[in-house]
Length: 547
Image (cartoon, rainbow, N blue to C red; front, side, top):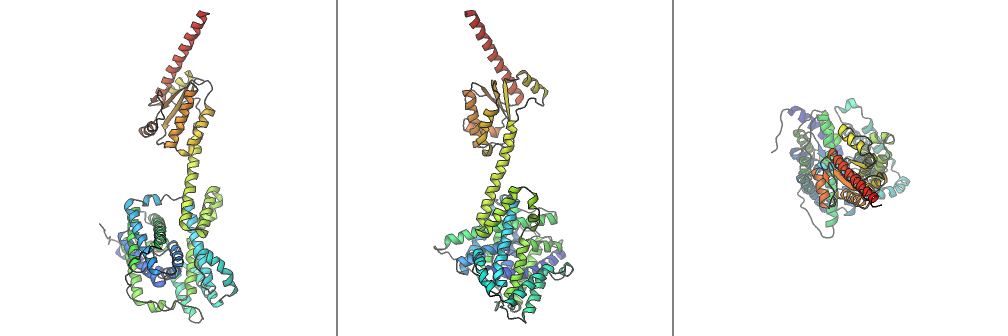
């Protein structure tokens, strides 16, 4: 059930109007950058902006075309030789994927991506956007793709169109240096667009040209066997990137509004918006951080503001298309360079050398993979490396805990029992979740640290909430070693989850007691040692008698 909150209507209208004005130059520029044209950018901003606001889970969020989505679309445009029908099919399917993500509850997992991975990923996307615009600033139209744009750069430098270069750089300077005081009335990007376009009237530079006006036409999905796999892959990438981009922006909105978004509902809203965008010939979009911040600072708090932002853009499409036709490519290139610079994570880059070196290396790896390979590979490799590093850290902590064979115990009764068993018992206490990371070394460390004269070995799992099969197999190895050495193994403190895993692979071994707590395990060890000593004494007495 969708509920509209009218308690902040004035603030929402003001925020929506401001966000719509800010979104105009960005939608035009990102539409051109995608290869599908400025109107595709506007249609995408309208569809995603309206429906993501109406159905999404972040009330103050403004959605529309973003840098990460455009990078994928530009690559797809080059691969499919500009076949717009297939690209719009990918956008529709991306929306469907996002709806499925939301229904399945994937949103909570997307938020688990480590920060260095996100930083490297976003910085890489910012670098790609800048690289793709360098040729356009020099007055050329470089081939598609990052590598193509870089390889074409020497050719562009050999034949610079200085009018285009000056106009593009001037636009960039206006966007960067626009006074904050004036920005309250005219956003920097919009000021750069207007000033750059007016200056271009006196310069021989290429412009956008004829732009269709009016309502968009319907684009039904097209499926071709030869390109189906490519379209599906692009759709999945768009869905994942859009989800990450949107949920990161949702966190920003939460911090500013002191609220909490609904991740899965947000994915469903974004999915509906992108599906509609594909049907009307718009590019894919996601939650846009800068536009969301502008909306909130201008008074927007609820979903009405996002809907107003989309309606503002719709009014512009219906009435101002002839004016947009006069915008030069160089002006949009300058604005896009500003977008790229804003996406780069300068804050982390400035401080990264002071943090853990592994995190910096991870960030740089993701950055390079993003720029020179592809986005999904970059995120996938980054998440896997981060997960392995985390598992290694936890494994190291677990093994360090295992090495600490206690000489004294905190509980007086347990400590008294341990004192009475001095030299006859070895206690190994596991700390935290026991996983495959530590499993390979558990047996080695137990063999290394067990006291040579120990008759009883206690494995204390009282601080282990969960255990995986790899760790259970390591326990089975420890049990086999103890039996082979003639020691009595005792397991204690294992909860139901841990016991279930141990019993599932028969790691207990017949005859190995499983006791509820360490105190009772020490009493069992005391009785067992006492029996062994009595048996030994009896055997010695019989030997003396016989002699």
